[in-house]
Length: 407
Image 1 (cartoon, helix red, strand yellow):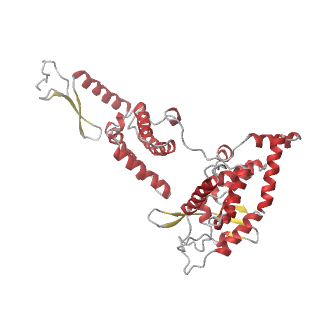
Image 2 (cartoon, one colour; image 1 turned 30 degrees about the vertical axis):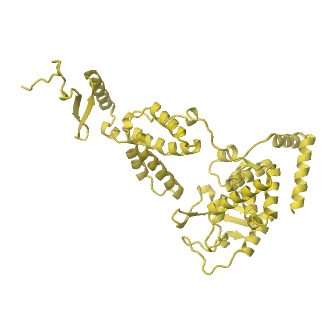
Image 3 (cartoon, rainbow, N blue to C red; image 1 turned 60 degrees about the vertical axis):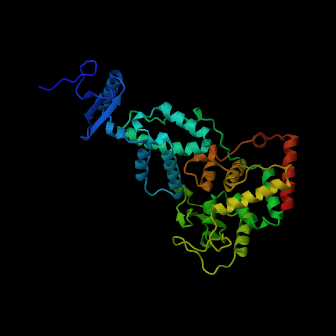
């Protein structure tokens, strides 16, 4: 007959329960995989609560052993299943993993993570200096990892299933399209500046086509059809941190498209080819060669080159014109601006979606177009046939004069 176990006060213990010499209670059981597991508690009431939770998990079909893995282990498992992702996505995965390995949160068992714990961790990262956009990226990896755990019955619910904006204020800098006046000011400065005028044609093409900067860098001579005056976009050029170049498909299937050359874009593309330095050996990347943009080392330019050109030029502009402020200018701001310009000119949404290479028209309408009062007034004036305000007309006339001066 088996011996009945009791605690130090003589209270009978249940099967699997025992009390150690240091008076700590423990409960031992075998999980669904045949593995022996143990949970501990400082008193019998707490131990019984843990036993009840384990029993409920079993009744509900929750895989307790799976819930024992840490957050870091879960994310590693999730990432291992993501094959064929883009380079930038891989970089994002590594960032999140490295962050988790430094955080106590990453060493916590997933079954012990509640919604409040996830929210507190987001707040902690924000206090540590992580911006809203960074938190969005981190949550973008961890949330689907926990969703995988939920779908595999490791946990009862996804603790990251909440709106980040309800926890942390959105302090990220929004991309704002340049106004016509700002476009004229910026392009006029670039055209006349002795240092940065060599990049003028690159900026004209980006502003006049709305291409992603990596698509622009990936253009080869074969992608330019000067006879039909159109640009073929069906790939991107990427360079890893280690210096390796490779070709990626466009961001979505819809990214494969043809973009018409405006007269300004046509002329600037001709200028780029005319001024392109002669190279001893053309770089070949995954079968692509004769890239139209070449750096000083005779290698194809990548996004970072053009981002730096804009950043350095803007720094000089602000130093020379502290009283005439311009917003942050990046290749992506040019893309926003192109989309907004086309929408303001009356281009229908589906055509604009095609030119932008968006898979979802909602992105075209809700993210890349920026309405203003002046734009709304001009649109209403055109539809309802009335004259816009004097101030608006004056601004419009001034813009025309500046463009005429720039040629």
